[in-house]
Image (cartoon, rainbow over all chains, first blue to last red):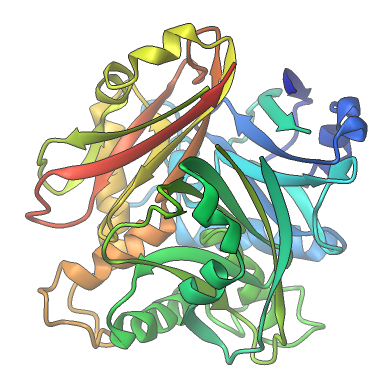
Length: 139
Length: 139
Length: 139
């Protein structure tokens, strides 16, 4: 059984955002699978996905702080500056995290660990809504 | 054919550890597959997976050195400090490497390159045992 | 339906290179799939893959600049130096990007976003040709 669907994530400010619930609500058919794989794929190059701690907003704020200092705006080596100071760092940050996130499905749901959640990593100041293409296969 | 199983990795000190053999020994059914995919998924947010050089312990030590300087403990921008100085860096390091590692299966085994091995990246000082959920599909 | 095939990428200089077309041309059977998954797997530890912006050569040049400053040659903490100054940074850069890239297939092609392309990230000065093992499953 294959499922393929686009899930639209509403526009969010720059930063790291927990979207596990939105993803799960977009995939009601998971309930019918005993075992499977779900591929979350974000069709953008300046926003990305990752899995991390799902409890403390502090953690997501510290993600933003670390990435902002590790990939600074206005660094002297940037040459692709036409689309604004947040653009080139956004591309690098996207490649340091994940565009494509494969998750196990077990007993009707995403088999995440207790503390794991899906983050939308929005690297642009005004990125707008983001589209995920989700592909699920299972039994 | 689907296989799904938890593999327990014993507690290891902070650092990068080669676990290819443990993973392969936990998946004897691979021998029956001509072609397939194996998803290694670590159900934690302060340990992670990656593939890299399987020969020199030097390489794994240098991984630890680089990650420790790139994501320092006690940086002034950390606000999530309640769980110890190694906790927040562990979360960032986990997202810079992989939580979910999809590997090709060919002729009864993981089709890794000659020099590739699976690393457990243990980012905590006392992380304890770690659990992988492995999902395999193949023919 | 399973397809598994090796795709050889010609030798390229150190840097980030767009290889979407080479990958697609190596997978003519995609045209027969309505839905599926393609796993691009690079069988090396000093070259890697990522998805990013497919239009401006500037972006790819800035990727090289950022990675070169973030993972410097000749850092005092490297101990694995026997294979040249570009070797150990290459291993780290490979783990910061992707060895294994799972892509959705839809209506006969890789379902990339408008601005997404597959990058070969060549981290060595003389890496030579690189081999991808591509595994596709679909319907």
